[in-house]
Amino acid sequence: MRKSVCLTLLVHCFCASLAAQTTTTAGLKAAKTVFEGQPATLRLAPHRTTTIRLPEPVNSVVVGDPTLFQAEYSPDEPMLVFAKPTSPTAAESNLIISTTHGRHFVMSLKSLGNLALDELSGVDLLVNCRPAEILFIEETFPSVLISETLDLATTASGIAVGNSESGRAGPNSLVLDDLVRRQRGQPLRNLSGERIRVGIGQVLEDGSRLIVSFSVVNSGSERIELVPPQVQLADQGKSGRLKRSRWNTVQQLPVDGYRISERRIEARGRVDGVVVFGRPALKQSTEGLFLQIADSAAIDRPTLAPISFRSTSPYGEKHDE
Image (cartoon, rainbow, N blue to C red):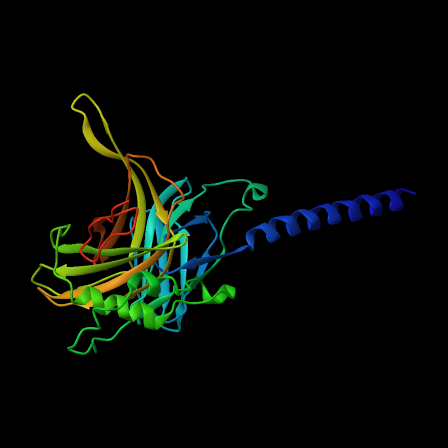
């Protein structure tokens, strides 16, 4: 009788332990997908290593605060980066990974600190990095511009933009090429920024999306390398006794696709591009849309160029309503 009771207790304890381990392991094995040009937050935990899988070999890895997080990669495994917290307490920093093909993945690292096993279900142990809808154009434009009779409004309505991996249509390359060529022939006006100067060209409405042409000028003395363009919806208000302007909220909008004539810009050089993104259904009067352009060597100092919420002429002037 005693042996039967002991055996029953032993089986019960084993089953409970196995169930707990299965639940914890199932939570910890959840994979996360990160897309190029779209910063993502990774949840890490002490004593656990997060594996980041890249689509191509790693070129460099930069951690914002190496005293809080450690990120390593080996030539033997050039497409893997291993990250983990070095502090047992909760902490935050950022991680930037560049690849040999010029892709950049920007991540925010968040350590959950020492938590119980049943509270670690949100830890990202496996992260898959995927390329965005990146469409670079080589510097092979003809010297003659496209015909001035091109109806951009009609042309833009034929653009189908989406994520090809999800089964939706990808960007129409010919249409985007035409928009970039047209922007290349436009004069530079109302440039924003200092070292990296950004000018917004024509803004077209395509249903719930905006198609924005832009130009980037490198006013510095050294070559720069651009990261994928980003679009932000930011709210600027005034606060304090001096009523100084400050950003209250910043929301990054998903970019459906973009074209750019060249990723690297020589000193005093210029490149032109077009970006397609979903326009918010509405916004407050204090909010504005901004195109964010940054150098891969100084992503903490981007240039923000204001974008019209509605369609404009090729020179950036708003259409009459």
